[in-house]
Length: 199
Length: 192
Image: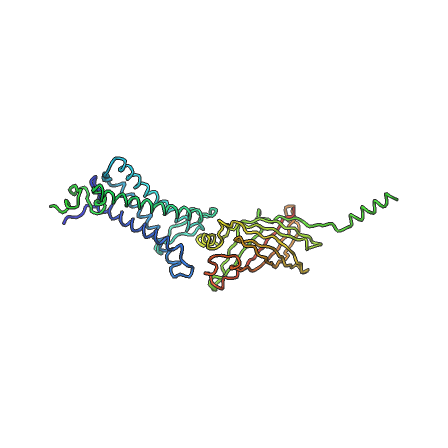
């Protein structure tokens, strides 16, 4: 068994990019579900205080993860996307929009919790200070933006997943596979996973 | 003779007690006015908050206090309990529902002067679309010239409101101890 490549190549994603992608996906799904769940919790529910604390903490970590991922994306070649020219362009812009939306959702969430000038604690490990606060009904405006951008993000994720499945099942290309199996610069080109197993 | 009569009539009119209610605007510009509320948190302590934006006027008639009247309009969204997430929660449809009911109003209906510097102010209070007759215990604090050429008059007032009276959807989740909300108002008006 060979060591999976860490970095990207023009042919595919390395292990780091793949891990960052799926960890981020889990983060965003958990954050969205937790967010929906916690806003309807009863005041006397045992999770009333814990759920928002976890949501805020994970949200900050997701933002940091996004920064790392963006850095990694800039430092690595982007694999050439499959599909027709318009599909490639669309894919590129969907990916860019993802970065923008995740950042905007994180920032708007931070603006809710820090609207009175208090910092956000991340699992008690460290705190993110308030920078913009004290604006007229800031928590309400930021809350409205946070909610709808989060729904927008989930809609985009749905589109993203549907497109990946379409590439996999209809076009039968390597789009989905290469987000599952590392194929970096030091590896033979792979359009199928079976090639990876060849000597 | 006629002229003397006329003169007497005029003098007599002048001596009649004229309705001399003074008109005041509550000093929300210089913010010498506070509407605060206190509610118990699970029976452990008092939570205090206030409404930061409101405006109003009052008439004050020293000679005939029955003429006193008060009108106040509160911007409910200006609720401030010094905790952004809690304020957001309180403004939501679960409690104050400020989008649907942005204003609360108080219009007095009667002033019962007790003659000792205190009074009972009765009026109609509208909050969350519900109008109720409420009574406030008013204490006169002071009146006189201010250092800047104006004339001011101030009061303190308290009352207790019931959460359940105003149909707050989730008022009950705060428990029985939070059923009564204590209101404390301190304000001064500038004579116009």
